[in-house]
Length: 300
Image (cartoon, rainbow, N blue to C red):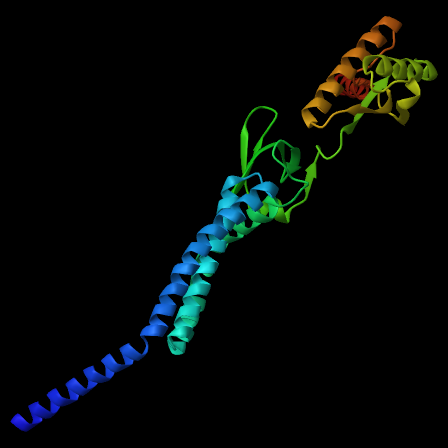
């Protein structure tokens, strides 16, 4: 019994001596690994600041710039960790870490699929030059001014001052119309005049009225005017002209102004804008026939 305990103690001492010898032999590698980790930490801090400055020059959203800077810093630190483990000859641990990171990343990706898709969509949208804060856009059935683009949502302010919050993924996957990319918009105006009207005079009057109401139109020749159909109670036309505007709200204001000025001009010149008329015809022939049949029965 005593011999067994003595042998076990000797084995333990030998193990400790072996570990101590290995530790002493690996002190240079350990110091180098620590230096690599410290250096990677400071490099990560510097890289984070540098990337943040560079990204903010291209992206106006601070949240997106900070996220990209943090991801870059994490990548630098992980690179330093892998180098340090390699210096310590811990390749098996390095392989285990990579495998564990892959499995964990897959699990997190599946669990946060919707959130991550919105996050990456927000990053992509932020780097698009054709979508900027202050633009007036239309997407997913909503129209308004872009007031915020962050890592989760796309925020619009509609003309009625209501805020619309749209997930970034929906904005990226659906068509988006940006009214602010050009400084000109075309206003389409549909109306109708009575059948008794002088159509040529109506065309000249409408074009002249639009040209006087909007300085950017200039000449009446710049106003497009087309008769489109013989309606139920009017002859309908389409009038189109260009205005200087970058906002859909300004386009609506211009259309309102055009309607008011055209109505005033038509009233002065006696041009009729008819409202729908329905004519009802009452045919009493059936009633007379029924009355005659009743009279015959009564006489019999």
